[in-house]
Length: 192
Image (tube, rainbow, N blue to C red):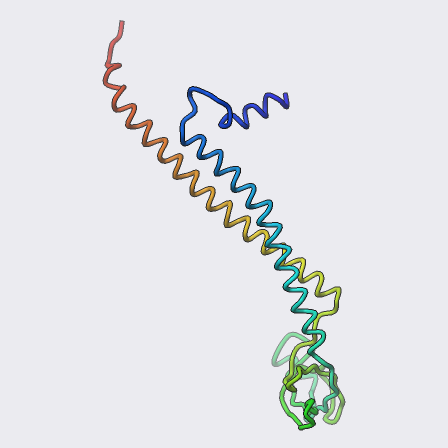
């Protein structure tokens, strides 16, 4: 049963008097699509995952935690008004790497009083940034991005192959129509 199914699946590659040029072209399109999906998808996924991992590693090196002082009280009520999370925007002050004092707003826990120390993250220029992902978080996120890139490439290649095959099908149907226009009248309405 397996050999029969394989013969049926690969009929376009076998020599056959009914095989058309378009059948051979379609076979090559299918082969190319699968090759690009397998090789290109793997390469795109690996390259994307590696690039994302390098970005996250650079973020872990360039971003540093710093203690900041909360400048205003943060009431519990502010959270219910502004958002559904337990953090709200509040004004803070911290010292930049060059020694200058900076002030800005960042998300902090509700219920804190002015003067409370909070931990924030800054880049080398003293700008507030988000906390870099841990190595585990970075690995998971890089894997997800790599998978997404591989699937995006596979989807695009599959769609291009489907468009090419649909055009071949349209060409075949048009050719059959032209052939029928030539042969059909010869059959006529001869009945015995």
